[in-house]
Every structure is written in structure tokens, then in C-alpha cells.
Length: 338
Length: 160
Image 1: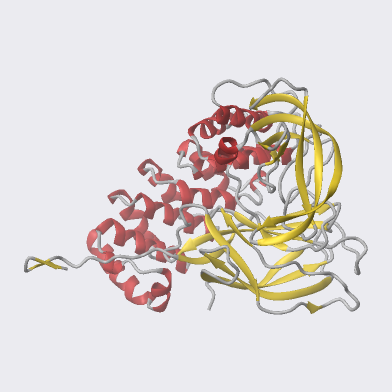
Image 2: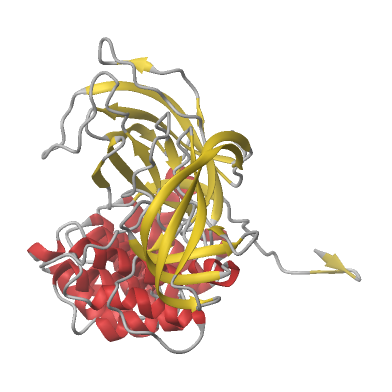
């Protein structure tokens, strides 16, 4: 598989050019709708040149930091928002002397850039952590509103067999984070045509949004681990745990309570708890016997929620201090109920 | 609660709060032209009922020790503690190596990962603020830097 040669843009994969001290930095979340709304210019393009334009200081995270002022020239391929009459634009970005996790920009990077207007028809990077996201030079011009076209650019990379696996995985991650119906629909459309780990990642992204169309696929991967699922069981399990609230998922979740992986069982039990209807009573009652303490906790909490007995719905700390009290109560309750 | 002489039934209210960090399985190790390597250590943030927090949340890290040398003669540097607003279901600590003029010379991730320790330090994580040391303390750990990657070791979450 040939890479498109695009810059695969993440804070982690990008070098911070010339900073003076490495750090351990929690990276701010990408907020694509906000970036799209706040940008004066959203454009797919290629950086053709970068030059240093002197030294300055910038305010960042409450600190004043010395930095180099850089100017990049961007050749425009497609303009999604903003003026589109010029073949190129210039924009400013900064390289701080201490590492702040900023993403560097260098030629010949290609991406979807988010810029804000500056003085005299110049532009500056809107968000130094995400000056641009992944895009492909050959993507078609999209239709609809700006965010929809941004999503289409990312979806094109996800679906492109010419993109590298890493690029396509990152595209799935970006779409997952958008949380809009358009992004979810793009993932849903892609699911049947993707394969291998990429398909499982797309499944996890959908499940995280509460879309259970990929639940059977996840179940198959979690109960009969295949080589392509290596390293993805946690992602799938957490997606189920955080996203699934649909009662139709109860039979599948009940089967996942029999998985060998403890994270899978915990997630299945937590999802049953989130569903919170009478349909979860039977599987959660069985989960009271699980060998793992946290699975048992999820069962206790879930049964308390279903029955409305909030005094028997402990926090995890309270539960850990007196597990037998809660277990005895709910096991006795289950005996009379089932 | 009593109103007009009538006492209501008892209701139990729980205020959900950040409680613990849970490691996600997706560690990422990659080579970096400037710093030798980039390490991403991914976490989720859960409340006291083990549910992931529902939205983006401010967090910060605080160092609680100076750096402790593991590699004799090392001259790697440590950046300042930082805060940021992150996604609660999957965020990461981004740790870089060092520039190539320093000792020992950093390198891209070995396969399997190398175990040549360079230095380490202790610290903790807070949720609820980007101001260093403010918010709910949810984890203590050691930042351990190796020549080809970094790790969080001695993790304790929820923080004692």
C-alpha cells in the first residue's frame, strides 16, 4: 500500500522544530466544529515554503515564552471557507523556545489548514496544537456546509486505499471525535468496505457514539480474538462501555459477560448498567458471581439503578470497603427475583 | 425534606466528581526527528461510579520531585508542568526525548522497547483546572524516561 505522502498530522507525530526543552504535556483535545467555526480560512493545501521572520514572545498557557516567528506559504488546492481567489496565502506560526506541544509546519506538508485572519490579508494558525488535520490532494470538492465538507475531507482519507494505515486510522479517530451525525454517518457508510483493524476501529468509533450497528462485529472480535483484533480489544470494550445504551444490545452484552478478558466483562456489565431497564436484571444478577471485583461492582450498581434502590448504589470506594455487605444484599435479592 | 409540615421520602443524591485515571490500551511510540522519540500515554478519566466524565475537562500535572539521574553523565532536561483541556474518554500525555546533542543520545523506539533508563521524577495529576496543582488529585506516578521511550511507572489512581 502506497502512502499518499501526506503529513499525518498529530501532536504526537509532529516534530516541534527547534524547541529547547522536551516536556511531558497533556495535549488539548481537537474540537473540529469549533476550529471550523472560528477559522477565517479553511483550506486544503500544501506548504511550499517556510521562513523565519524574527524573534518574539508569545502568551501560552499562562506563560510568556520566547519564540521564533515563522511564515509559511500555502498553495491552495480547495478552499472550504474564506476567500478563494488567490492561488497561495501566507500564514504565521510560532515555534516556542520551550516545548509546549505545538505542531510544527514544514514544506511540503499537505493538510486541511485552519487559519485566522491577520492584518493586511495575512493569516495565522488558529490553534497551534492543530494547525491542520489530515487531508488528501486528490479529494473531490465537497458539498454542503463547511463542517460537512471538512468531515468529507477526512472521510475521504479514511476510505482511500492509497492512504497509509496510520493515516486512515487517524482519520477514524478524527471522525469519532466530531460527534456529529454527519461524522457518524461517514463511519457507518465506511464500515462494510473497510477491513482488518481499520474496520474494528471504525466499529469502536460507532459504538462510542451509541450506534450499535457494529455490535455484532465487535462481539465476534472480542469473543473469538483474531490476529487483526490484537491490541484493539480494549478500545472496543471501552467503546461499548461508554456508548451503548440501547436495550437491543442486552443479549450481546450478556454473551460478552462470558468473555475471558476482564476489561471486556467489566465493559459489558457497565453497559448493561447504563441501559438500566428490567432486561438487564438477569445478566447482571449472574454477574454478581463473576471472579472479578469490578464486574461484581458493576452488577451491584446496575441492579440498584434498575430497582431504584439508590441507598444500595455505592461509589467504587464505598464498595471496596464493604463489598460483602452489598454482594450479600443483591445476591439475596436476586435469589428471590429470578 | 419538610414542606408545610409534610416530610418527603428520603432521596439519595450523588455529586459525580473526577475520581481516577484509567490507562487506555493505545500507547503510541514513534520516532521524532528533533527529539528522538514521541511517546503518547493514553488515559480516560472516570468518576466515583467508574463512568467516564461526560465532556472535555481541564487537567494539569504537577511535579513533586526534582529529576533523579539513572544514566551516569546524562544531561537531559525536563520541561515545566502543564495544564490543558482534554477529552475525558481518551487523552494523552505527550512525552518527548531530547535533542541529539545531549547525553545519552536519544533514539527512535527499539523493537522491543529498550530499557536504558536516563532519568525519572515524581508527580501527580489533577482534574478540574489547568492551574498547576489545582483541582481533584486523581493519580500519582513517576515519569520514567528511557533512551527510546518514556513510561508512567508506580501509578496509583485514585491518588491516596
